[in-house]
Image (cartoon, helix red, strand yellow):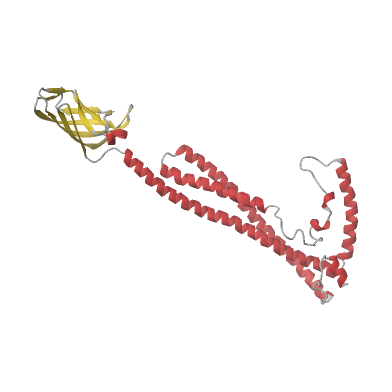
Amino acid sequence: MDRELNESVGGSGATGLEGLSDDHVKDLRQTLRHQIDHMAQRIEYTESRLRALALVAAALVAAGLALLQVVLTQFESLAAEAPLGILASSFVLIGLTMWYAYALQTNYPYPFVKVATTWKWFYHYALKKEAFTADWYRHPSKESKKKGEQAYESQWQEFRSRGVTDLTNLRIDTLQDLEQVFLLHVNERYKNLFLTHLRQILHRGIVAAVILALVGFVVALALDLTVLSDDAPMSSPASGTHAAGGVVVEASWRATGDSRVSGVGGEEVRLLVNAKIENRGESALSAATLIAKDNVGMFLPIFVESATPQPLNIPAGSSVDAVALVWIPAAVSRDLHHFELDE
């Protein structure tokens, strides 16, 4: 009997049931049946959580793509674009990584598939699978259907004979259940590993995304402030001197705090200009107003709102103090280097 039991379950050596009475084996079988049902439910619960995380991955990809579209079309500030863009890209990357891991977990090559002998519980060990096939792209042919019908009849005879012989044997049947319990333990171990992997990808990915977004925000804000500082209208007083042809114009200016929007130059700021104009030549000079240039001598567009005196008449060997209010485009106001006479 022990030899028959050992050969039936495909093992070698003692099975552990030899020394038990029939009543003890029956109690063990009842306990194992209850345990199998309970473990199967736990595995199904873990698989439902895996599917839920796969849906979370899909939601992350969708949310990331939607947010990325908003970032690319709605924001102009780098301090807003950078962190939101990092979050959007991270969401897509996290979701795709979770999908990749979930795909690897599907039909995972479990180690027990090749070595287990639980033919009572799993078709893999109960059937000769070559006869039962299905194409994904078409219905079975007449030949394939006939082959399957013949295989069903022949294998059913074998399965019935084995079932009647082995499953009516209390110890063989119990040993099948015992191995199934162990197989479910191994299966549950892998399922929980899969769940842990997906949760780690999600949790660590979200934490990394938030940290990167915060770093991106700080860096982008610093860059934005630098750009704004460079592009902002000049607010502190500035001065410049220009000398050419016996005429020296010493000017100082500051922003008054007033601004306006022009249809030509965009935003403009108003400057208060004080200038001392010295004529070192031998003949008198007369100029309509002042003109503005940058440090390489290029003209800057300005509109002289008012100037005193006007026109500027400077006798030879003398100087005149002038005061003016001028409008200049905010974008080039910091490029203002000096004033000259518009002769």
